[in-house]
Every structure is written in C-alpha cells, then in structure tokens.
Image (cartoon, rainbow, N blue to C red; front, side, top):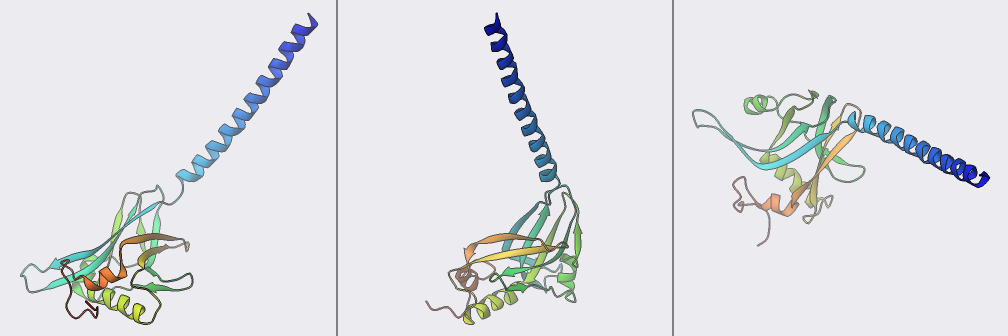
Length: 187
C-alpha cells in the first residue's frame, strides 16, 4: 500500500510541475502578444514610374513615390523620408510644396498616419536620378547597390525598404522604362 501512495504522490507532483510550467508559458505568450499587438507596423512600397497630367494636357510631371501604409493599430507620425546611404549618412528628401502639382499630391510632413491609412511621399524624378548620379560620382554609392529607402517617425524609429532595382537601372531608365538619353552611362 505504501508503494501505491508513493507512486500517486510522485505522479501528482509531476503533474503540478508540468501545470506550473504550462501556466508560466501561457503568461509569457500573453505578455508577448500584448506587446506585439501594440507595436507600430508600417508597410512601404516604392515606384519610380509615376506621372501626373494636368486636365488641359499642358503639364506633365514625373515623380518617384514611396507609399507608406500603417498596418498596425497605433498612430505613426511620419516625420521625414529619404535614402539610407551608410550607417552615418542619409539623403533626406524635402518635397517642393510650392509646386502646385506636388502640393496637391503630397501632404506636408510631419503627418499623423492613423491605422489603416496611407500616405504617398513624392519627389521629382529628375532630381531623384540627379541625386543618385551625384552620389555615385562622389563614390558614396555604387551603381551595383540597391537603394534603401527609409521613413522616420516621431520617436526616431526608422522603417526601411530595399529597392528591387539597382542604382544603375534607375539612372539609365526614364519614366516610361525606355533607355534615357544623356544619362551619362556608357553603352
């Protein structure tokens, strides 16, 4: 009889230990889920083939576009955007809000991006390509590099997107995907 009591006592102790571990694991998972659910989440998409035409057809503007979507459940305040050049250096894009076309399509920064909202950050295509060319000529960027775009929020956190194309492709392609003239590339 003593062996049966000892067996069931040991069995109960093992069950209690397993139950305590399962409870601790459940608490850890719950705390992680709460923290994860409240994290800021941003989705970035980049396009360099954007054109705006005026209604009467006398104006055509080519621009690059970084679309920022808030896919989290907290507001994100977009403070700035640009290209990450190195650990220490970034190229900050400041849109020309005096231009009526850019003023119409670009909201001024900082911008409060609520959950399930998006904003389009735009920059003149010629200036974008010109800046890339300058940085390549200075040796800061390489033609074989891919561009790393970023946005910075009000807390200083940066969200990144690596381009699908290499810098050389941006420099040699115009807004319609044809080879650009006078782009400075050797063929």
